[in-house]
Image (cartoon, rainbow, N blue to C red; front, side, top):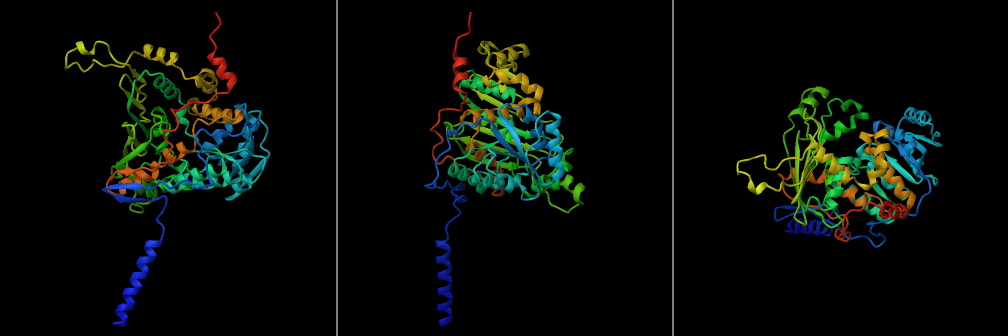
Length: 479
């Protein structure tokens, strides 16, 4: 009897201890056949970063961390930026640092003052007090840890995509940015492509009516590039994870089109993937047949419904021979835009009601000449001054240059950035959310709110301009 009582007491104590253990504040529970993510309360020492503007910086002193393909591309663009100077370079390998220095010299820019290398070289860079911004182009798994370290040491940060690979990391970025009052911008370059910017301007001018549905994707056969990822880090990540592991190129521009956390929010997500047919074949070829079970489906599809009743479709495919596509579609009550495989606009036909019911061509894309004329008439203000130089400097056709320019422009004038830490968290959150949905049989996921209830406090997305420029644009043209 004593043994039984002792055992029962032990069980009760264990149960009590388990009940007292705090639940993961950033985790989820399953309720009514939905995965419900927590949105923890904002700590008392943090403030919202919505609309945040830091003190102006005359010349932004940049420390670049990660000098592989993306980082070296940034080095090539930096000498063309009028508001920034590269003062520090850091990479795991010192020879990459020297290669970057030679790029600066070749372009007539001064060599960076500071050089760092090794696994913890980034810490030495972040700990300097004469650097304003840390620009990260390292493997995904290092994005958040280095960004958090940089903000904690008084630096603004710009992070390659995705900014985070888990919900915990998304919250780490949000909480650190709110606590340190430092900008945390994800370098989502596709928001600055010309077609997307012009469509955003047309949406804001009402040409599309009410937006009903948007689509975006990342469909890019990476077969020629797998060997270029140092240490095989990207293949290692893909072979271990289901879900849309690289969602931001697709979802970034369309979230801006429908004002996510600026009047609307992503509420519920459902994801599913195909089996890894091509992916498994690639893994077998690289590592030996059966060495690894490749997790990431050849094609991942995600559907999201917003609080305001709009729908989002996002796709991911990096292993099939499908031609490159970011999809980008906007469906409105008065218009439609499509970028891939061909750029097209349809703004409604006046005589649709007069055509036969079986005429499938009643609604057509406007001609290329009409499309180009409307694109020119509704050219986004950002492109008015930057398009020509962006095309010359390049970087994915010029959008990389515009992205960098806007970052440094806003820091120089002390303006809110075009993308904030909530964008970085929301768009990157799909990495974990899609995997969890798939893990539970494509169960719906109630998404966390990284703004903590402030998603409707801002009325639409705006791009800030210095007062003098804004006044100049508002002045009527001289006759």
